[in-house]
Image (cartoon, rainbow, N blue to C red; front, side, top):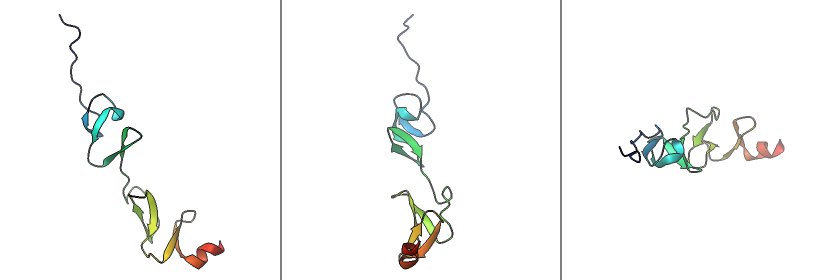
Length: 89
């Protein structure tokens, strides 16, 4: 009996294609996941991040930003403010 034969195992759910077990064995990530530090990590969505009423989560920057581009997002208060109001704080 050949003991060197290994049986294939299913990929981690975050992997579309893999070479080893776990989310760090991925070659390609499943939809809704991206590579970060050699692992497939779940993408955050607007529903996952509370940015307040006047802001949206930007996946590309991984930060909240104001819908009105003339305002700046205040991360401490989770509100959008006019530039002058932000400077006064």
